[in-house]
Image (tube, rainbow, N blue to C red; front, side, top):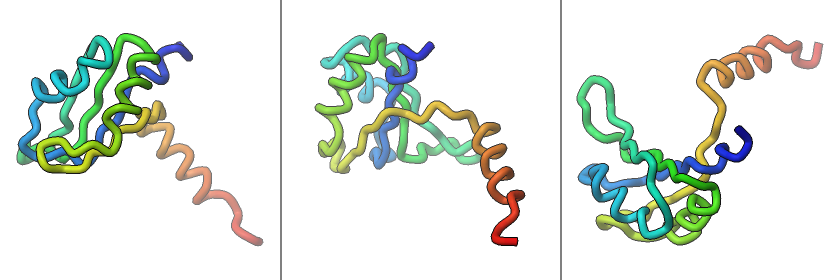
Length: 105
């Protein structure tokens, strides 16, 4: 499982006109894109301006991140980084622990 932690990338500041096919086309020169997912607002279904790209290997993901981070795509400067692996439940648990801990008493 540790091998797969670095295969997913987080892409931010995407143009709202970007689609999944374009994402795959831009990232496929660096390796096999297993999944490209644009995140959308649940009510309006409009893109939120970020996406997740999953590659077959960590090496491919690293190549794509180095090549695509800081590039201008569809008129927007995009940022690419390794996606965080924590689930929202784990984040909430951590937040509760911090809030519940005694602060200077």
